Length: 493
Image (cartoon, rainbow, N blue to C red; front, side, top):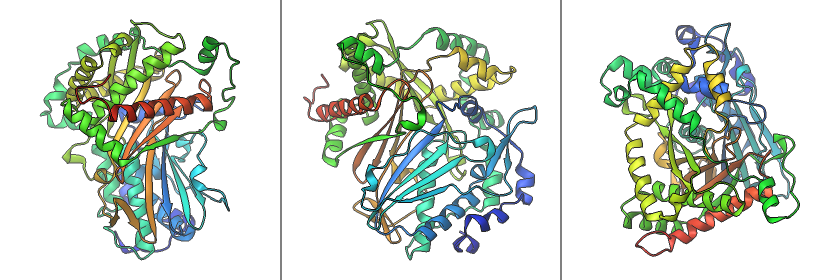
Protein backbone atom coordinates (compact mmCIF):
# COMPACT_ATOMS: atom_id res chain seq x y z
CA UNK A 1 0.00 0.00 0.00
CA UNK A 2 1.48 3.38 -0.96
CA UNK A 3 1.70 5.99 1.75
CA UNK A 4 -0.94 8.18 0.12
CA UNK A 5 -3.53 5.45 0.56
CA UNK A 6 -3.15 5.76 4.34
CA UNK A 7 -4.33 9.36 4.34
CA UNK A 8 -7.89 9.96 5.60
CA UNK A 9 -9.23 10.61 2.11
CA UNK A 10 -12.75 11.78 1.48
CA UNK A 11 -14.67 11.04 -1.70
CA UNK A 12 -14.15 14.68 -2.65
CA UNK A 13 -10.38 14.49 -2.30
CA UNK A 14 -10.12 11.17 -4.10
CA UNK A 15 -12.08 12.54 -7.06
CA UNK A 16 -9.24 14.78 -8.12
CA UNK A 17 -6.83 11.86 -7.94
CA UNK A 18 -9.01 9.90 -10.33
CA UNK A 19 -8.63 12.24 -13.25
CA UNK A 20 -7.30 10.31 -16.24
CA UNK A 21 -3.62 9.60 -15.60
CA UNK A 22 -0.91 8.16 -17.81
CA UNK A 23 -1.81 4.57 -16.94
CA UNK A 24 -5.48 5.21 -17.68
CA UNK A 25 -4.55 6.81 -20.98
CA UNK A 26 -2.66 3.66 -21.97
CA UNK A 27 -5.28 1.16 -20.80
CA UNK A 28 -8.59 2.88 -21.49
CA UNK A 29 -11.04 2.84 -23.16
CA UNK A 30 -11.12 -0.88 -22.31
CA UNK A 31 -13.61 -3.01 -24.27
CA UNK A 32 -15.96 -5.08 -22.15
CA UNK A 33 -15.23 -8.79 -21.93
CA UNK A 34 -17.74 -11.36 -23.14
CA UNK A 35 -19.20 -11.93 -19.68
CA UNK A 36 -19.27 -8.23 -18.81
CA UNK A 37 -21.26 -7.44 -21.94
CA UNK A 38 -23.66 -10.29 -21.16
CA UNK A 39 -24.25 -8.84 -17.67
CA UNK A 40 -24.77 -5.37 -19.15
CA UNK A 41 -27.30 -6.61 -21.71
CA UNK A 42 -29.18 -8.69 -19.13
CA UNK A 43 -29.53 -5.75 -16.73
CA UNK A 44 -33.11 -4.52 -16.22
CA UNK A 45 -34.73 -2.05 -13.85
CA UNK A 46 -37.07 -4.85 -12.76
CA UNK A 47 -34.26 -7.42 -12.50
CA UNK A 48 -30.99 -5.57 -11.85
CA UNK A 49 -27.77 -7.53 -12.23
CA UNK A 50 -26.55 -6.59 -8.75
CA UNK A 51 -24.66 -8.84 -6.33
CA UNK A 52 -25.46 -8.17 -2.67
CA UNK A 53 -22.99 -8.92 0.12
CA UNK A 54 -23.74 -8.43 3.83
CA UNK A 55 -21.14 -8.04 6.55
CA UNK A 56 -22.16 -7.84 10.21
CA UNK A 57 -19.57 -6.25 12.48
CA UNK A 58 -19.31 -5.75 16.24
CA UNK A 59 -17.61 -2.78 17.84
CA UNK A 60 -17.83 0.94 17.10
CA UNK A 61 -17.61 1.36 13.33
CA UNK A 62 -16.05 4.77 12.80
CA UNK A 63 -17.72 6.68 10.00
CA UNK A 64 -14.82 8.94 8.96
CA UNK A 65 -12.35 6.04 8.82
CA UNK A 66 -14.84 3.86 7.00
CA UNK A 67 -15.53 6.47 4.33
CA UNK A 68 -11.79 7.05 3.89
CA UNK A 69 -11.33 3.28 3.45
CA UNK A 70 -14.03 3.19 0.77
CA UNK A 71 -12.35 6.08 -1.05
CA UNK A 72 -8.99 4.29 -1.03
CA UNK A 73 -10.64 1.06 -2.24
CA UNK A 74 -12.31 2.78 -5.18
CA UNK A 75 -9.14 4.56 -6.16
CA UNK A 76 -7.33 1.22 -6.46
CA UNK A 77 -10.10 -0.67 -8.30
CA UNK A 78 -10.25 0.46 -11.95
CA UNK A 79 -13.66 -0.91 -12.97
CA UNK A 80 -15.32 0.65 -9.91
CA UNK A 81 -14.21 4.11 -11.04
CA UNK A 82 -15.33 3.76 -14.67
CA UNK A 83 -18.45 4.43 -16.69
CA UNK A 84 -19.44 2.45 -19.79
CA UNK A 85 -19.58 4.22 -23.13
CA UNK A 86 -20.50 2.83 -26.54
CA UNK A 87 -20.14 5.60 -29.14
CA UNK A 88 -21.81 3.38 -31.72
CA UNK A 89 -19.31 0.57 -31.31
CA UNK A 90 -18.54 -2.05 -28.70
CA UNK A 91 -19.16 -0.83 -25.14
CA UNK A 92 -15.99 0.05 -23.25
CA UNK A 93 -14.90 1.07 -19.77
CA UNK A 94 -13.90 4.74 -19.52
CA UNK A 95 -12.40 6.28 -16.32
CA UNK A 96 -14.49 8.79 -14.42
CA UNK A 97 -13.09 12.22 -13.64
CA UNK A 98 -14.79 12.10 -10.23
CA UNK A 99 -16.27 9.20 -8.26
CA UNK A 100 -19.83 9.43 -6.96
CA UNK A 101 -20.04 8.86 -3.20
CA UNK A 102 -21.37 5.29 -2.83
CA UNK A 103 -21.80 5.31 0.98
CA UNK A 104 -25.25 5.62 2.58
CA UNK A 105 -24.84 5.85 6.37
CA UNK A 106 -27.92 5.39 8.54
CA UNK A 107 -28.03 5.40 12.35
CA UNK A 108 -30.66 2.92 13.50
CA UNK A 109 -30.84 4.04 17.12
CA UNK A 110 -32.22 1.31 19.37
CA UNK A 111 -33.13 -0.96 16.43
CA UNK A 112 -31.13 -4.08 15.64
CA UNK A 113 -29.00 -3.48 12.51
CA UNK A 114 -29.07 -7.21 11.68
CA UNK A 115 -32.78 -6.87 10.95
CA UNK A 116 -32.09 -4.35 8.18
CA UNK A 117 -31.76 -5.63 4.62
CA UNK A 118 -31.41 -3.74 1.35
CA UNK A 119 -34.24 -3.74 -1.14
CA UNK A 120 -33.76 -4.72 -4.76
CA UNK A 121 -32.47 -1.59 -6.48
CA UNK A 122 -30.64 -1.09 -9.77
CA UNK A 123 -27.21 0.45 -10.19
CA UNK A 124 -26.51 2.71 -13.17
CA UNK A 125 -23.21 1.15 -14.15
CA UNK A 126 -23.23 3.02 -17.48
CA UNK A 127 -23.00 6.28 -15.54
CA UNK A 128 -20.21 4.96 -13.31
CA UNK A 129 -22.34 3.87 -10.38
CA UNK A 130 -21.22 0.28 -10.13
CA UNK A 131 -21.22 0.01 -6.36
CA UNK A 132 -23.43 1.09 -3.48
CA UNK A 133 -22.50 0.66 0.19
CA UNK A 134 -25.13 0.99 2.91
CA UNK A 135 -24.32 1.04 6.60
CA UNK A 136 -26.92 0.50 9.32
CA UNK A 137 -25.04 1.81 12.32
CA UNK A 138 -25.32 1.40 16.07
CA UNK A 139 -22.53 1.93 18.61
CA UNK A 140 -22.31 -1.79 19.39
CA UNK A 141 -23.03 -3.61 16.14
CA UNK A 142 -23.47 -2.49 12.52
CA UNK A 143 -24.44 -4.05 9.23
CA UNK A 144 -22.72 -3.25 5.93
CA UNK A 145 -24.45 -3.94 2.64
CA UNK A 146 -22.06 -4.07 -0.31
CA UNK A 147 -24.03 -3.93 -3.58
CA UNK A 148 -21.99 -4.50 -6.73
CA UNK A 149 -23.04 -4.48 -10.36
CA UNK A 150 -22.22 -7.85 -11.91
CA UNK A 151 -20.68 -6.19 -14.98
CA UNK A 152 -17.93 -4.88 -12.67
CA UNK A 153 -17.09 -8.03 -10.76
CA UNK A 154 -18.15 -11.55 -9.79
CA UNK A 155 -18.97 -13.05 -6.41
CA UNK A 156 -15.39 -14.02 -5.53
CA UNK A 157 -14.21 -10.51 -6.39
CA UNK A 158 -17.00 -9.11 -4.21
CA UNK A 159 -15.65 -11.10 -1.25
CA UNK A 160 -12.12 -9.92 -2.02
CA UNK A 161 -13.32 -6.31 -2.19
CA UNK A 162 -14.80 -6.64 1.28
CA UNK A 163 -11.50 -8.09 2.43
CA UNK A 164 -9.58 -5.15 1.00
CA UNK A 165 -12.07 -2.70 2.52
CA UNK A 166 -11.56 -4.17 5.99
CA UNK A 167 -7.79 -4.11 5.51
CA UNK A 168 -8.00 -0.41 4.65
CA UNK A 169 -10.20 0.20 7.69
CA UNK A 170 -7.86 -1.77 9.94
CA UNK A 171 -4.91 0.36 8.82
CA UNK A 172 -6.80 3.47 9.93
CA UNK A 173 -7.94 2.20 13.32
CA UNK A 174 -4.73 0.85 14.81
CA UNK A 175 -4.97 -2.69 13.46
CA UNK A 176 -2.29 -4.87 11.90
CA UNK A 177 -2.91 -5.83 8.28
CA UNK A 178 -1.15 -6.83 5.08
CA UNK A 179 -1.54 -3.97 2.59
CA UNK A 180 -2.29 -4.55 -1.10
CA UNK A 181 0.93 -4.70 -3.08
CA UNK A 182 -0.56 -3.52 -6.36
CA UNK A 183 -0.81 0.14 -7.33
CA UNK A 184 -3.78 1.59 -9.18
CA UNK A 185 -1.71 1.86 -12.37
CA UNK A 186 -0.60 -1.78 -12.16
CA UNK A 187 -4.20 -2.87 -11.58
CA UNK A 188 -5.40 -0.99 -14.66
CA UNK A 189 -2.68 -2.51 -16.83
CA UNK A 190 -3.46 -6.03 -15.58
CA UNK A 191 -7.09 -5.84 -16.72
CA UNK A 192 -6.19 -6.19 -20.39
CA UNK A 193 -5.55 -9.92 -19.83
CA UNK A 194 -8.68 -10.68 -17.79
CA UNK A 195 -10.68 -12.62 -20.40
CA UNK A 196 -10.09 -16.40 -20.28
CA UNK A 197 -10.67 -16.51 -24.05
CA UNK A 198 -7.92 -13.95 -24.61
CA UNK A 199 -5.51 -16.07 -22.57
CA UNK A 200 -6.45 -19.23 -24.41
CA UNK A 201 -6.07 -17.64 -27.81
CA UNK A 202 -2.77 -16.05 -26.87
CA UNK A 203 -1.17 -19.11 -25.36
CA UNK A 204 -2.62 -21.76 -27.63
CA UNK A 205 -1.91 -24.24 -24.84
CA UNK A 206 -5.28 -24.62 -23.19
CA UNK A 207 -6.63 -28.02 -24.28
CA UNK A 208 -9.99 -27.30 -22.64
CA UNK A 209 -10.35 -24.18 -24.80
CA UNK A 210 -9.75 -26.20 -27.98
CA UNK A 211 -12.01 -29.05 -26.92
CA UNK A 212 -15.16 -27.42 -28.29
CA UNK A 213 -14.81 -26.22 -31.89
CA UNK A 214 -16.75 -23.13 -32.92
CA UNK A 215 -18.84 -25.30 -35.27
CA UNK A 216 -20.38 -27.10 -32.29
CA UNK A 217 -21.63 -23.96 -30.60
CA UNK A 218 -24.83 -23.49 -32.69
CA UNK A 219 -25.98 -26.95 -31.60
CA UNK A 220 -25.35 -26.09 -27.98
CA UNK A 221 -27.24 -22.84 -28.45
CA UNK A 222 -30.18 -24.73 -29.90
CA UNK A 223 -30.30 -27.10 -26.92
CA UNK A 224 -30.27 -24.14 -24.57
CA UNK A 225 -33.17 -22.53 -26.40
CA UNK A 226 -35.38 -25.60 -26.92
CA UNK A 227 -34.75 -27.66 -23.78
CA UNK A 228 -36.85 -25.37 -21.62
CA UNK A 229 -36.35 -25.73 -17.86
CA UNK A 230 -39.26 -25.73 -15.44
CA UNK A 231 -39.83 -22.55 -13.49
CA UNK A 232 -40.16 -22.55 -9.73
CA UNK A 233 -43.80 -22.38 -8.65
CA UNK A 234 -44.64 -18.78 -7.83
CA UNK A 235 -46.94 -17.35 -5.18
CA UNK A 236 -50.00 -17.26 -7.46
CA UNK A 237 -49.59 -20.91 -8.45
CA UNK A 238 -49.08 -21.98 -4.84
CA UNK A 239 -52.22 -20.18 -3.64
CA UNK A 240 -54.25 -21.43 -6.57
CA UNK A 241 -53.31 -25.03 -5.82
CA UNK A 242 -54.24 -24.95 -2.14
CA UNK A 243 -57.29 -22.75 -2.62
CA UNK A 244 -56.20 -19.90 -0.36
CA UNK A 245 -56.31 -16.23 -1.39
CA UNK A 246 -53.24 -15.10 -3.31
CA UNK A 247 -50.84 -13.05 -1.22
CA UNK A 248 -49.52 -9.90 -2.79
CA UNK A 249 -46.25 -9.85 -4.68
CA UNK A 250 -44.13 -6.76 -5.05
CA UNK A 251 -45.49 -4.15 -7.43
CA UNK A 252 -42.01 -2.64 -7.69
CA UNK A 253 -38.65 -4.25 -7.03
CA UNK A 254 -37.82 -1.59 -4.45
CA UNK A 255 -40.34 -3.10 -2.05
CA UNK A 256 -38.75 -6.57 -2.08
CA UNK A 257 -35.73 -7.62 0.02
CA UNK A 258 -32.58 -8.19 -2.01
CA UNK A 259 -31.32 -10.90 0.35
CA UNK A 260 -32.65 -13.28 3.00
CA UNK A 261 -30.17 -15.25 5.12
CA UNK A 262 -30.18 -18.40 7.22
CA UNK A 263 -26.97 -19.53 8.92
CA UNK A 264 -26.21 -23.16 9.69
CA UNK A 265 -24.08 -23.66 12.82
CA UNK A 266 -20.65 -25.23 12.77
CA UNK A 267 -21.75 -28.65 14.08
CA UNK A 268 -24.33 -28.98 11.29
CA UNK A 269 -21.74 -27.99 8.68
CA UNK A 270 -19.37 -30.63 10.06
CA UNK A 271 -22.05 -33.31 9.79
CA UNK A 272 -22.85 -32.27 6.22
CA UNK A 273 -19.18 -32.61 5.31
CA UNK A 274 -19.07 -36.03 6.93
CA UNK A 275 -22.22 -37.13 5.07
CA UNK A 276 -20.70 -35.98 1.78
CA UNK A 277 -17.35 -37.66 2.47
CA UNK A 278 -19.03 -40.94 3.34
CA UNK A 279 -20.55 -40.93 -0.14
CA UNK A 280 -17.27 -39.92 -1.84
CA UNK A 281 -18.63 -36.57 -3.00
CA UNK A 282 -18.01 -32.96 -2.06
CA UNK A 283 -20.16 -30.69 0.05
CA UNK A 284 -21.16 -28.72 -3.06
CA UNK A 285 -22.49 -31.92 -4.64
CA UNK A 286 -24.67 -32.52 -1.61
CA UNK A 287 -25.97 -28.94 -1.73
CA UNK A 288 -26.86 -29.35 -5.40
CA UNK A 289 -28.67 -32.61 -4.70
CA UNK A 290 -30.76 -31.09 -1.92
CA UNK A 291 -31.76 -28.05 -3.96
CA UNK A 292 -32.85 -30.37 -6.82
CA UNK A 293 -34.99 -32.33 -4.39
CA UNK A 294 -36.33 -29.17 -2.78
CA UNK A 295 -37.36 -27.60 -6.09
CA UNK A 296 -39.04 -30.84 -7.17
CA UNK A 297 -41.05 -31.08 -3.95
CA UNK A 298 -41.89 -27.36 -4.01
CA UNK A 299 -43.25 -27.59 -7.55
CA UNK A 300 -45.13 -30.84 -7.05
CA UNK A 301 -46.89 -29.36 -4.03
CA UNK A 302 -48.08 -26.52 -6.27
CA UNK A 303 -49.05 -28.84 -9.13
CA UNK A 304 -46.32 -27.45 -11.39
CA UNK A 305 -44.17 -29.57 -13.67
CA UNK A 306 -44.13 -33.29 -14.29
CA UNK A 307 -41.73 -36.21 -14.15
CA UNK A 308 -40.32 -35.19 -17.53
CA UNK A 309 -39.77 -31.53 -16.62
CA UNK A 310 -36.16 -30.34 -16.67
CA UNK A 311 -34.70 -28.72 -13.57
CA UNK A 312 -31.73 -26.66 -14.69
CA UNK A 313 -29.37 -25.11 -12.17
CA UNK A 314 -27.02 -22.41 -13.41
CA UNK A 315 -23.76 -22.69 -11.49
CA UNK A 316 -21.19 -19.87 -11.71
CA UNK A 317 -17.77 -21.36 -12.45
CA UNK A 318 -14.58 -19.55 -11.51
CA UNK A 319 -12.20 -19.20 -14.46
CA UNK A 320 -9.29 -18.11 -12.26
CA UNK A 321 -5.79 -19.45 -12.81
CA UNK A 322 -2.39 -18.74 -11.27
CA UNK A 323 -1.72 -16.35 -14.14
CA UNK A 324 -4.38 -13.88 -13.02
CA UNK A 325 -4.18 -14.15 -9.25
CA UNK A 326 -3.18 -10.48 -8.99
CA UNK A 327 -5.96 -9.11 -11.17
CA UNK A 328 -8.12 -6.42 -9.52
CA UNK A 329 -11.85 -6.93 -9.10
CA UNK A 330 -13.44 -8.08 -12.35
CA UNK A 331 -15.40 -10.99 -13.80
CA UNK A 332 -13.34 -14.16 -13.96
CA UNK A 333 -16.41 -16.35 -14.05
CA UNK A 334 -18.68 -18.18 -16.45
CA UNK A 335 -21.60 -20.59 -16.15
CA UNK A 336 -22.10 -24.32 -16.18
CA UNK A 337 -25.56 -25.88 -16.32
CA UNK A 338 -26.54 -28.88 -14.22
CA UNK A 339 -29.73 -30.31 -15.73
CA UNK A 340 -31.84 -33.29 -14.69
CA UNK A 341 -35.49 -34.26 -14.90
CA UNK A 342 -37.74 -33.90 -11.89
CA UNK A 343 -38.23 -37.66 -11.77
CA UNK A 344 -34.50 -38.12 -11.09
CA UNK A 345 -35.06 -36.85 -7.55
CA UNK A 346 -36.75 -40.17 -6.76
CA UNK A 347 -33.33 -41.85 -6.86
CA UNK A 348 -31.21 -39.47 -4.75
CA UNK A 349 -28.14 -41.73 -4.49
CA UNK A 350 -27.95 -42.13 -8.25
CA UNK A 351 -28.63 -38.44 -8.80
CA UNK A 352 -25.91 -37.50 -6.33
CA UNK A 353 -23.33 -39.52 -8.26
CA UNK A 354 -24.44 -37.93 -11.54
CA UNK A 355 -24.10 -34.49 -10.01
CA UNK A 356 -20.65 -35.40 -8.72
CA UNK A 357 -19.56 -36.52 -12.20
CA UNK A 358 -20.80 -33.22 -13.61
CA UNK A 359 -19.05 -31.06 -11.03
CA UNK A 360 -15.81 -32.95 -11.65
CA UNK A 361 -15.96 -31.93 -15.32
CA UNK A 362 -16.87 -28.37 -14.34
CA UNK A 363 -13.53 -28.03 -12.55
CA UNK A 364 -11.69 -28.35 -15.85
CA UNK A 365 -13.16 -25.04 -16.95
CA UNK A 366 -14.42 -26.50 -20.22
CA UNK A 367 -18.09 -25.76 -19.52
CA UNK A 368 -17.23 -22.22 -18.59
CA UNK A 369 -15.26 -21.70 -21.78
CA UNK A 370 -18.19 -23.03 -23.82
CA UNK A 371 -20.50 -20.40 -22.32
CA UNK A 372 -17.98 -17.63 -22.97
CA UNK A 373 -17.55 -18.79 -26.56
CA UNK A 374 -21.30 -18.62 -27.01
CA UNK A 375 -21.30 -15.03 -25.72
CA UNK A 376 -18.41 -14.18 -28.05
CA UNK A 377 -20.24 -15.73 -31.02
CA UNK A 378 -23.43 -13.83 -30.21
CA UNK A 379 -21.79 -10.44 -30.00
CA UNK A 380 -20.37 -10.80 -33.49
CA UNK A 381 -23.97 -10.33 -34.66
CA UNK A 382 -25.57 -6.89 -34.21
CA UNK A 383 -27.84 -7.06 -31.16
CA UNK A 384 -26.98 -10.75 -30.95
CA UNK A 385 -26.73 -10.94 -27.14
CA UNK A 386 -29.96 -8.99 -26.59
CA UNK A 387 -31.79 -11.07 -29.18
CA UNK A 388 -30.60 -14.30 -27.59
CA UNK A 389 -31.73 -13.13 -24.16
CA UNK A 390 -35.16 -12.23 -25.51
CA UNK A 391 -35.45 -15.73 -27.06
CA UNK A 392 -34.22 -17.34 -23.82
CA UNK A 393 -37.10 -16.52 -21.49
CA UNK A 394 -35.98 -18.94 -18.77
CA UNK A 395 -32.22 -19.35 -18.53
CA UNK A 396 -32.49 -21.77 -15.65
CA UNK A 397 -34.74 -22.92 -12.86
CA UNK A 398 -32.45 -21.22 -10.36
CA UNK A 399 -28.89 -20.01 -9.80
CA UNK A 400 -26.67 -21.60 -7.17
CA UNK A 401 -23.39 -19.83 -6.35
CA UNK A 402 -21.01 -21.26 -3.77
CA UNK A 403 -18.12 -18.91 -2.92
CA UNK A 404 -16.81 -21.40 -0.37
CA UNK A 405 -14.54 -20.43 2.49
CA UNK A 406 -14.39 -16.64 2.53
CA UNK A 407 -10.98 -16.32 4.19
CA UNK A 408 -9.34 -18.79 1.79
CA UNK A 409 -10.72 -16.82 -1.17
CA UNK A 410 -9.00 -13.63 -0.03
CA UNK A 411 -5.47 -12.46 -0.68
CA UNK A 412 -4.94 -10.04 2.20
CA UNK A 413 -4.39 -11.10 5.79
CA UNK A 414 -6.20 -9.88 8.88
CA UNK A 415 -5.84 -11.17 12.44
CA UNK A 416 -8.36 -13.88 13.36
CA UNK A 417 -10.31 -14.51 16.55
CA UNK A 418 -12.31 -17.77 16.45
CA UNK A 419 -12.20 -17.63 12.67
CA UNK A 420 -13.43 -14.02 12.49
CA UNK A 421 -11.50 -11.12 11.03
CA UNK A 422 -10.33 -8.46 13.46
CA UNK A 423 -10.16 -5.20 11.48
CA UNK A 424 -8.72 -2.62 13.82
CA UNK A 425 -11.36 -1.81 16.41
CA UNK A 426 -14.10 -4.06 14.98
CA UNK A 427 -14.73 -7.79 14.59
CA UNK A 428 -16.36 -9.09 11.41
CA UNK A 429 -18.98 -11.52 12.67
CA UNK A 430 -20.65 -12.73 9.46
CA UNK A 431 -20.21 -12.44 5.69
CA UNK A 432 -22.82 -13.65 3.23
CA UNK A 433 -23.95 -12.83 -0.28
CA UNK A 434 -26.24 -13.69 -3.15
CA UNK A 435 -26.20 -13.30 -6.95
CA UNK A 436 -28.97 -11.58 -8.95
CA UNK A 437 -31.98 -13.19 -10.61
CA UNK A 438 -33.18 -12.65 -14.18
CA UNK A 439 -36.78 -12.85 -15.46
CA UNK A 440 -38.39 -16.30 -15.01
CA UNK A 441 -35.45 -17.55 -12.96
CA UNK A 442 -37.22 -16.85 -9.71
CA UNK A 443 -34.54 -17.89 -7.23
CA UNK A 444 -30.82 -17.40 -6.67
CA UNK A 445 -28.97 -18.97 -3.75
CA UNK A 446 -25.54 -18.06 -2.46
CA UNK A 447 -23.37 -20.03 -0.02
CA UNK A 448 -20.50 -18.63 2.00
CA UNK A 449 -18.48 -20.32 4.74
CA UNK A 450 -17.20 -18.01 7.43
CA UNK A 451 -16.21 -18.58 11.06
CA UNK A 452 -17.25 -22.21 10.80
CA UNK A 453 -20.81 -21.46 9.73
CA UNK A 454 -22.48 -22.01 6.38
CA UNK A 455 -24.51 -18.95 5.42
CA UNK A 456 -27.34 -19.66 2.97
CA UNK A 457 -28.52 -16.49 1.22
CA UNK A 458 -31.59 -16.18 -0.99
CA UNK A 459 -32.72 -13.68 -3.62
CA UNK A 460 -36.13 -14.13 -5.23
CA UNK A 461 -38.05 -12.39 -7.98
CA UNK A 462 -40.37 -10.15 -5.97
CA UNK A 463 -42.77 -9.80 -8.89
CA UNK A 464 -43.48 -13.53 -8.71
CA UNK A 465 -42.66 -14.70 -5.16
CA UNK A 466 -43.85 -12.69 -2.18
CA UNK A 467 -41.79 -12.29 0.97
CA UNK A 468 -43.70 -14.96 2.92
CA UNK A 469 -43.17 -17.58 0.21
CA UNK A 470 -39.54 -16.54 -0.19
CA UNK A 471 -38.94 -17.05 3.51
CA UNK A 472 -40.73 -20.39 3.38
CA UNK A 473 -38.61 -21.50 0.43
CA UNK A 474 -35.43 -20.67 2.35
CA UNK A 475 -36.61 -22.18 5.63
CA UNK A 476 -37.69 -25.44 4.00
CA UNK A 477 -34.40 -25.72 2.15
CA UNK A 478 -32.24 -25.13 5.22
CA UNK A 479 -34.39 -27.56 7.19
CA UNK A 480 -33.68 -30.12 4.46
CA UNK A 481 -29.95 -29.48 4.86
CA UNK A 482 -30.18 -29.96 8.62
CA UNK A 483 -32.00 -33.23 8.00
CA UNK A 484 -29.35 -34.34 5.50
CA UNK A 485 -26.72 -33.72 8.17
CA UNK A 486 -28.20 -36.41 10.43
CA UNK A 487 -29.22 -38.93 7.78
CA UNK A 488 -28.06 -42.52 7.55
CA UNK A 489 -24.42 -42.51 6.40
CA UNK A 490 -25.36 -44.81 3.52
CA UNK A 491 -26.84 -41.88 1.66
CA UNK A 492 -29.68 -39.40 1.36
CA UNK A 493 -33.34 -40.22 1.39
